[in-house]
Structures are given as structure tokens and as C-alpha cells.
Length: 233
Image (tube, rainbow, N blue to C red):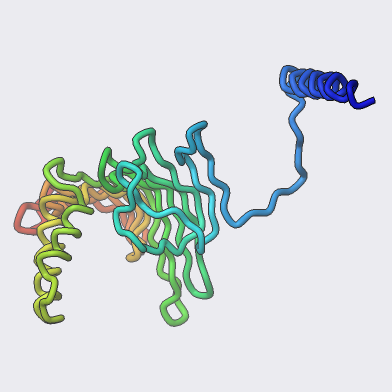
């Protein structure tokens, strides 16, 4: 009987292989009614991460070249995060909220940097009134330095500084960032003021054109000069 075991094993192996090939060729994949997971990672044959669908506790963090931009960072928001073929995080979809506030968005990142195009919604309760801001917006980012490099340089340069010194330097950095490196250029949607319309900004992030309906249902069209003065159309 023992001398026949290798032959039996071979027959079983061939049978199982044939069955698996048949299932694969006929695309007879298993359909699950429900799958529960804290995180679902879509990877390539080499294990490279392309998509992470996660709860807040296990959400993927931003990477460049497959390496974390901020090691130990916690991104406490549920959603879907996308990565390209070289390991850069390139945007995602999120939806979150709790009592009195909620937010959601679809983000598209610039190559090697943070988002430049997005559809977002933010709302929060201020006393008995809800404040809401939602729509489509564009940013323009510099190719000379990324937002993440700028923050890393800031952390290194201010190491050991007092809180007052750091706060002052941080405000200066954000001003430079908003006016030169990470400029808000367009918003189409509803603002917290309840104005609904198209709002355009110049290369320094200053509002220059407003075409909107105000909170009292008045149609408005404003052209604003570089000093912030309203000009007649």
C-alpha cells in the first residue's frame, strides 16, 4: 500500500490543480454577502500599497516614495486613501462627523505635494445656528518646495525655541505659504456667510472677483483691486 501513496498524492494534486484552473478560467469567484474589516489594503503582486480603505484608528498616513512624511503621525478620519506606483499618497475620499459637526471631501494631490483640487464640505453648530461651507476649490502650489518639506524645515529650524518664538515663526511661515507657495485660487460653492457663487483669487491669494447671490437673495458682481478696494464692473 505504501508504494502506491506517491501515485495517489500525484492524482490528488493533479485533480486539485485542474479544479482550481477550471474555477479561475470560468471566473467562478466567491461572492460574500458581507465582509467586516478594520482596514482593507489593495496591493500589487509585490505588496505595494495602492488603496487603503480604513476606519479612523488604522487610516493610512501620507507617504512620499513609500516612506512616511511624518513618522508616527495619526490621521484620525475614516475613508479611502490612494497611492501611486512610486509610493506617493495622491489624494482620497473621507467622511466624518460627530454631534454638532461633520466634514467630507474628495481630494486630488499635486505630484509630490498636497491637494490642489477638491470638493469639500464642512459644517458645525454655533449656538443654535449651523455654519456651513461647501463646494469645489482650487489651489496653486509651488514646484520649488513642497508643503511637507517646508514643515520639516520649520521643525528643524525651531527646535529648542520657546513657544512664543515658535508661534511667531509659524505665523510668518504660514503667511509666506498662503501668499507664495500654497495659494488659494478659486472657490465655487456656498460660504459660511450664506453667499453662493464663484470667487476668484489672484496669484497672491487675494480675492479679486466675486459673482454671487448674497444671503438676502441679491445678485452681486464685484471686481476688487490689489489693495482690496471694490471697483465698478
